[in-house]
Length: 213
Image (cartoon, rainbow, N blue to C red; front, side, top):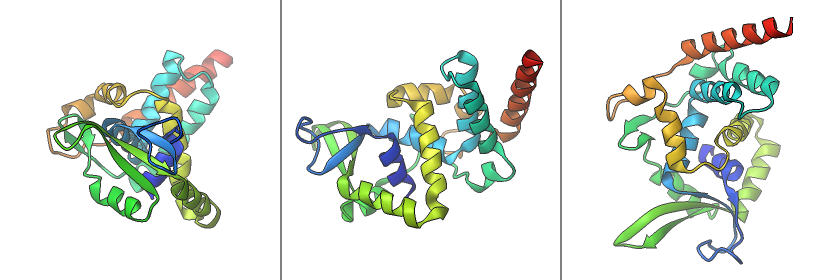
């Protein structure tokens, strides 16, 4: 369900009538496994997502400061970072998890489609992940009937605001700027940064309060 919400919220609109690579029934696409893994990392690690919100706030790329601060605060409240954390391994190209089983399950139910781009099977340039109309309809039903799953939807919306349409490589470069992420030993779980980000949030909040006093 997590990946289904990511594809629905973060996928770019596509039309099989104009996109020759899109399968029938496709409504959105996430292009490249790097981008999908990077989006999934932020959804699964609220402390890293909150820190990137603060990075964009301070750089001026997140223009609505109050919204950015409010979202960062919500991501760091109470037990939220620990309860919704789902660690990922540090792999060759950054945070990674084998997604084949989960994606195959979604594909077997006709909710998504996965397409190889290049000259398969000998030369595959990337994998693209399509949300199908049936998948979007299913997500809509989940929003209406499964309130316990809505945090996936809300978190994926924040992830999209932070990631925009950056490529997987661009997102990975951003994530590698976190020292804890970059220094994690290969094949080890990437550690959390909750305490550091909470202190940063307090400092920025205090600075803004002082400026408006």
